[in-house]
Amino acid sequence: KRGIESLLALLSTHLPDTRERLVAFFCSAYQRMSWLRQTAPYPEHEWMKILNHLEVHHKAMDESTRARITLKLHYLGIQE
Image 1 (cartoon, rainbow, N blue to C red):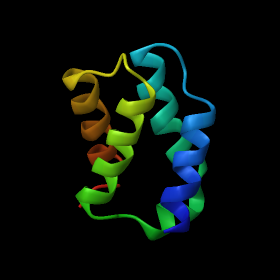
Image 2: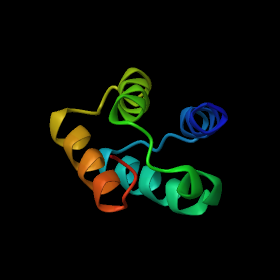
Image 3: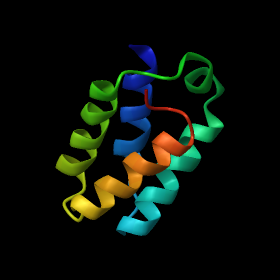
Image 4: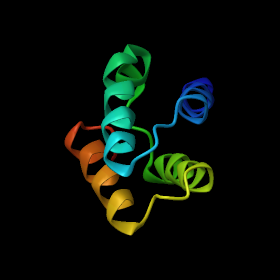
C-alpha cells in the first residue's frame, strides 16, 4: 500500500534518537497524514510490519516501547 510505504520512508529518514521521541514522532506523523486517517484502520499485521521496520532501524526499541506505540495507535483508532 502506498500509505505504508510512504510512512516507512518518512520514519526511516527521520528516526529520532531516543525511544520517547520515537513514540512521539511516530504518533504525530500519523496525525499529520490525513490520507492515513481516511483509510484507517489497517489490519494489525500491517502495523506489525511498521514496528518491525522501526526495530530494525532503531536498535534502542524494546518491548515496552513497542507496547507503548501499539497502545497509542490503538487509542488513535488506527488499529483494528
